[in-house]
Amino acid sequence: MNYRPTLADLRALSAIVTHRSFRKAADELALSPSTLSHMMRSLEANMGVRLLNRTTRSVAATEAGERLVSRLTPLFRDFDLALEEVNEFRGHPSGTLRINTSEIAARVLLDDAVPTFLTRYPDMSLDLVTDNRLVDVVADGFDAGIRLREAVPLDMIAVEFGGDTRFVSVASPAYLAAHPAPQTPDELKTHACIRFRLPSGKLFRWEFEKHGHELAVDVPGALTLDHVELMAQAAAKGLGIAYVSDRTARPFLEIGALVTVLDDWCPAIPGLCLYYPGHRHVPQGLRAFITVLTEVERRGR
Image (tube, rainbow, N blue to C red):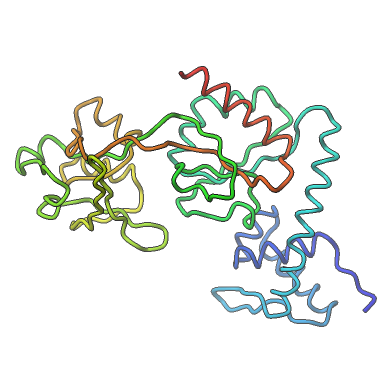
């Protein structure tokens, strides 16, 4: 076969297979879905192989498409690494740094680290993707991720920041006036609890610890949400007891809209970490961001 696809065509195919969506791939590549669809039709016609199975609602790789993308993925990583290594001869970071993070962590970064980084390195762009799912940062094309220390994969290098954190049970004074505060986690089963649904669809189990005794409770409740700030807001409205991070609860606690319960069952745990694979070349922009994050952490102590 004399035909050789362009790098842009292959990148586009990889993005479609990764996202399983023309629209999401088009957003990533800054193209229109119709342009992307035309590129794929031309690619398949020129290669003489069907690479994608399309329906009105979804798109997925054929066996041939899956095999091609699986071989291309490490090549793209090596290609990007080669460009990054050359970029380091510029003497100062440039390009785009992609970080996958939770919304809570993004708010922490926006307080100081992000403004400092963008001011200090004007040739850098920062792409913060907030996602409550635990993604594979390497497979999904991120330079780094940010999560609680306990959720960081063991094969990653972790940089802690922001100090320890706590998950706390909170309720409004009005709710507690009508419902005596629980004294043990088991007593939550007699209360209205505001439950949290994970991105996987599963309900989050509330986890407690006291004097080394760990307890996880499947709490009851008529209200289930998938956003922690909405949980705190619902609790402040008197709809029940919520279980959220102390950062989420703090604004409501400071004005008295919420109070904590089961305090002695909610110890501090290791807080947020930026993490990245140690077996890969660390991009210059990521090294610069880690430097800024470390400086901000020292200033906050």
